[in-house]
Image (cartoon, rainbow, N blue to C red):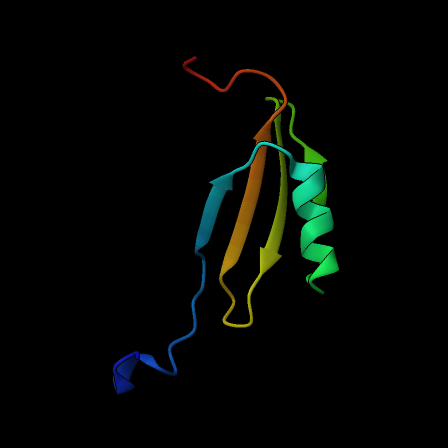
Length: 73
């Protein structure tokens, strides 16, 4: 589907982020599908829990869950 000039372009420095309701369940679901996290679940000091997975093209996906209310709420 991609035009020929884009087919061999690899991604660098891109993160696609999704907020999820149950990060632990998402990690288990991904592992059941054979996907190992690039970065297993960790909690940041500001209350964000996240994990990273990387697709074969090098695109990094962040799945995030807030341990407390996100900023601005």
